[in-house]
Image (cartoon, rainbow, N blue to C red):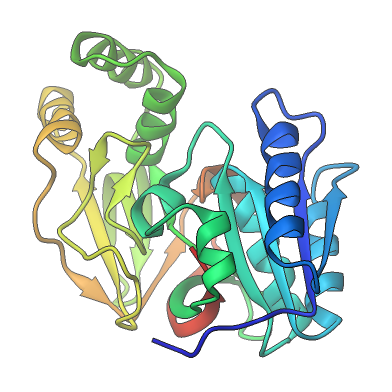
Length: 296
């Protein structure tokens, strides 16, 4: 473990219009850190529009010895992580205080209450996923937890928005089934394959209930797990999806890089946020080892 860190600045980024507890939690964290670290400049940074957290995080990281805290769910934290990566800073540190529908990263990777962890100042480094599309010099986007195509991420988000309880979870999955269609990709060897789900996971769980693999809680091995559902009868997919929400899917193959091409336009999810990719796009998923410094 690295030596304890003390920061010149701490920037707390949050959405003031969040339907959850983000504004309240951000204020409480600001109060705790101001009292515990009186020599540190601790400032609240509310976002003003979608994507603003990227700009705020980039600006904060570029200032030097800074800690950037995202008070959000996985999607908001994704913006902060990408802003820090865009800055090129080598000494900026990230943290997340869970305040969203999906808090997978905080739940799996977090070790103690955030204010306590920041006060102690123990920094560690984790891997990130990087997705690159098209030409080799295309702008890369980073994920702290997962990148998913097809059913599994859609099902996981649907479960997260639904109510707890095995029966209600089953109905949530069934609703997703009715509108879901498999998708086709061209693998790096030129072969075409059809999947119901393809997930690249930097952590072992999604949406509280789905356990995707037996990977550890500290993503720092330079690899990610690839969880595939080849196209199959829907009843078999349903059983597999429900197994993920109960006992988990077990060991999964791990890779440092995975390449494929889309056949048709298709949506995908990155840390819970829905995006889209055009047909005939070359996609590369890489693990970037120990590139992000975190506290928590």
